[in-house]
Length: 505
Image (cartoon, rainbow, N blue to C red; front, side):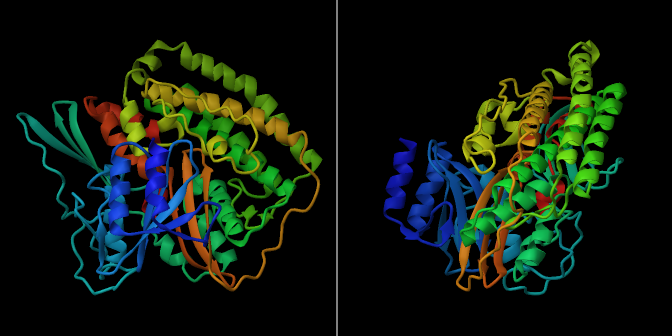
């Protein structure tokens, strides 16, 4: 029924033969609003919402269907708000207004989001009128009313070496009534930096969007370019991309599992997981020449090869880590004081996760069975059986266990690929195409799905937009901490480990 409703809308829309691999449709404001109602009813997932000076674009996916993009031309500096029907769109519409000056009519929240008043102009990707510098602290947090409430501001500068973000707690004693996030402190202007760049330079920018996901962002950018230009990376390059992506996944999962335990004062697990993570990063450095494998995936293929000895070295590290990781997992499971902190803490309900289309361990720990490796099916995962564990409890403990099972599954995938890497070239030459072409990609990073869209012409990127999994996970952290005590926020926050850099772009 959901697919039929979207099909009926798109049957009346103008199909644009510009985007690959998924279709793009030009709709009018009426159809745009109908799609907002579909999202409100839960008949489709919103994948991304972004803008250009002349159009706003919405990527969505109905159940059992491929993704598609719908576009609405902007003629009077505004468009009907999707956020008035579907709250996950609200922050994205606030971002569009800050960057382009385009108004989402009906959006229930018109406060600035990325614009903290320090740019000395408005709408840097739009009309760019000058603006006086404002105090970033002059920001109207949402009101909370009730007896005995008090506020606790935290950040944007934190005690640890983490990225900046502000959290405004309203509590009754220790019990949290509401926490509201204020982000945007790491805005780098990624969309603007990419516009006009040649493809090689844009690939370097993509690799630096979020350092812990440099492989995933490079993968997504390369896949989007290849889709736009109609080329395919060689088989050897595709497998090596998978090897890098799974190494990045287990390194981050090791780090996260240890960090969550550390926030529960269980430093032993943190120490061991830190060693596991370091072992993976060190072998990546020796094999690929970079601990984070930055710049190793490029449009057309890969920029780093491995020998049979290199493959055996990675497998030897996995063989050494597997039983040691199993011991730490058993220790986690057998320690009541640790379980007391993680079980039934920071619960996110299934309905919220479904409504926000939250991916990664946040979604799968709350029953949303989606993994882009399996459900989108891009190389080298297409046709493979990808083990994507799904739990229902939605608490910190569930998010830990999803990471544990995913790390185990990644090590299994790695052993299979490293035993039989196809021979052949590493790169396919990109064709010289003068007319504009568009490509998009969805890649499963360790944190969840990454969306990338771009338009290329004559060897340059005209426009590009990336969307991190954190965009739809950050708001759920606000829900997770409600009715918990303030002291539980660090462990809840760590179990999400949302990206500031990936969100702020």
